Length: 92
Image (cartoon, rainbow, N blue to C red):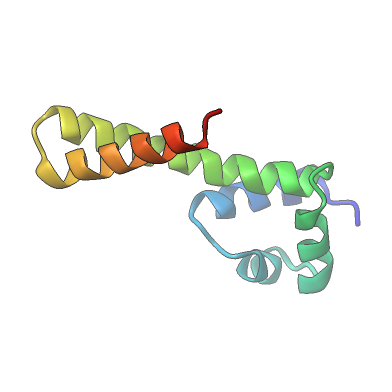
């Protein structure tokens, strides 16, 4: 399945709002099974667009958490420590 640049952009945008692959397929007008197959292929442009959208939002969330944590927010500090602990547990 070959997606247009516009479709890839829309996949990235919708993924940034944490839409599921099924929801994205419906909004973009793609076959759900075809899009899911593309998203399992780590070499596909659709996979990269989907991941890029999710990761951009993840970055923004982490920035917000760290900003709030540095300002003294207890819940944000707890979340920041969880993220840090998770990251450190994944490193060799």
